[in-house]
Length: 295
Image 1: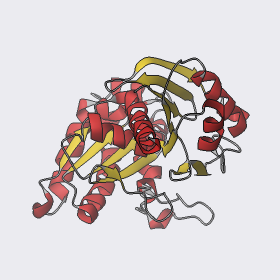
Image 2: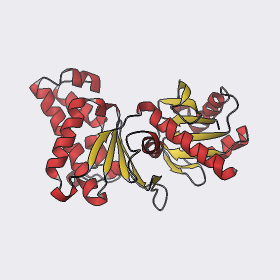
Image 3: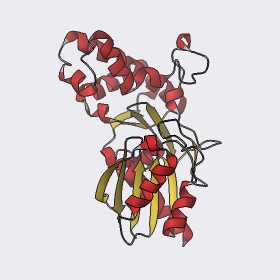
């Protein structure tokens, strides 16, 4: 069994071949998302044609995905014209093999659940901190998708209703305060030269910078405390490059345990371990499942 996998993001498209272990022949290409959804699909076909002899395709992609029918329910303007794109239909017509399509965070959660940090947990949450905040709910090793395939939109947890603005569904929400984007914005208010996470963590030893980071960590913890008390998970897998910072993970673990009810303190907060292969591996696994169903 040979599965071709793509992980389509707003900046890059990662690709690889899966035969049951880690992804092989891994490549990365610019998405050029500003050219629109139709262009991205042509780009995906071009990349897949660079591989030979695969039996199925697994797609991890930005946007809200109807995974049952394989199309994009909603995508923001990071990929213009992507909403409504019939990804599975387009690729099945092109390659004549089964195709599975899933939201990128859900695919990453499946990857971590099958092969990574969540492999010993039947039920867990996966949260990624990057440009925004993404989430996934895993129950019995399967993604809980909700009534319209959009469960796990943790970035929309309302934390600061005083900042709510009409017309902006994410105003006052978790994503606006706990994302890496929010950290950089907060740091730049103090020092305009702190334009990215790398520069911030190079100066984490400075008390003023550490205070900025600690205030941001508090926002992360607010959301985690809420989710732990709602879901009572055994494990939460924390993804995103920022979680590779030992200081961040340790402080998040400490503060979260301090602020939840004692009866919930068995929860394990751990770093995602698959890095940029999580989405590829999750997509590949789903592609293998689509192949089994076709048989």
